[in-house]
Image (cartoon, rainbow, N blue to C red; front, side, top):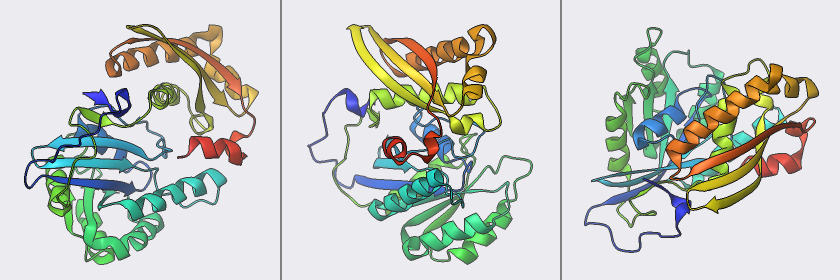
Length: 309
């Protein structure tokens, strides 16, 4: 498998007769399982996953190739009702990606009641319902109520193309979701070569892995106060890349927590990030990782412009 940015090659030859290609936007509430679906469907660790809502901050592409054709998924941030500046940016990102989509995958968490946020998503999708596939996720969970979720979406989006029960975590129903999306997909040339599974830039992937490893080791407000800045990258040999990165937080107290007693936590984050990056890239990453404070960065338009894309 390959990152799309490893080469500028794009498939120019015509696909086999009947092959399909579609751009698919994934939408759902925070923690509905959108990123887990993308990783399971692609067989790669494309989107970072944590137990915290709105771990995904960007529109992340993942590419799934099968004998039926190519689906280019755009995983979007969880659609959340909040007037905070960062959340408004992420909501706008979601709505912008809906207009470009050939198909839309709406992921519903069957372990939670369908409240106001679910109603807002359904209202957003109603004009586009004929190209919407609904995946009722987490059906493996003991607390799941898939029939309640099904009743909600049938009433809210009666014109949706198909409703599919799914457990993205257990890879149950994922193939059924893909088949439904291919049914909707138009015939056309592939957007990427079949060896590609994402179009993320190398620095973005490295930053996301570091952020994931930090988020799963801290609690309370700190996970949402973290972003990662890649300051420098250098290929020092064909088999090694050196990277200087900064874990950025909003306050000095958060910096101390991330560093940890005797710098143990920041060391663990660096080592675990290196392990995961080794599974992604065909070369070793030599990571120089430090922590710094960017006071109140979530209120800075210039910072949000760079981080939410």
